[in-house]
Length: 282
Image (cartoon, rainbow, N blue to C red; front, side, top):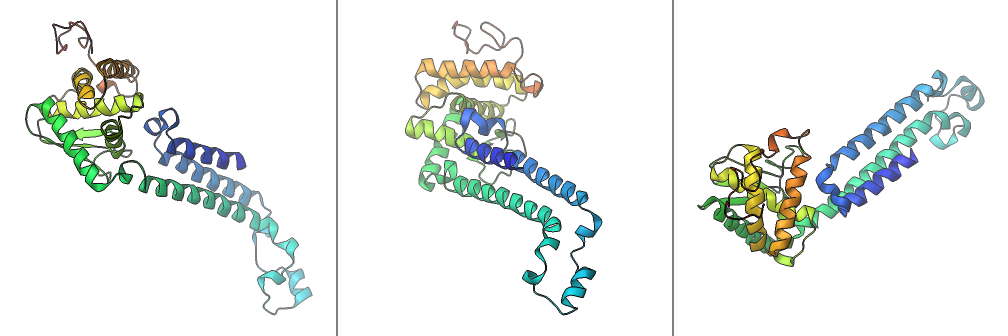
């Protein structure tokens, strides 16, 4: 049991510091759900293993003969009659307390860091910038919003962004907004996370432009992402490298999300190549 609690604590801190892009790969609720399930399973197993008489917390006959039928305080009962039955409950309470404490740490950190920790005026300015960038890709005025309440995108919806095809409004997760904000505001790039955030913004922009097919949208997003990355502060070599990395990762998603895999024509000189004059792709 101790190893599981230590593992949960280690995961939480690794997730908070985004070790190896952990925030993108594993939803935070999953290890907490597993931990609670293990605590309950251990409690049930320990409780079932107790002899029937140990589960009865009422005064035993020998106690009544020794102390009489008067009402005793809890600390007056013989110590040896309580621990066996109390042990599973104590373990469950300790485990639940550890899980609750770690959840509180995550809540406090998330509330005061990341996108939520950005000054409201700076958030507003950043969202306006994202909307401007999306509008350049779409060719008309559109709006990008960061879904702080998780109503449209996020872990439950299993999406980093969502947009109505041909519409004017798209939502991004706060984590993707924060990645874009750090790139624009602090010139910070964390490779995979930054590349993914750029690709998501470009992807939803192409949906707003009217492209419905997810694979084709991804193909266009990787290509537009190069210019988008440059406008957000990257040099061309870095922007192109990040989008090529996204193209490689796209091929690895064939089994889990086949609808997002780019078509075979998504290549230099292919039908989906947006710049037939250039030999660079994306």
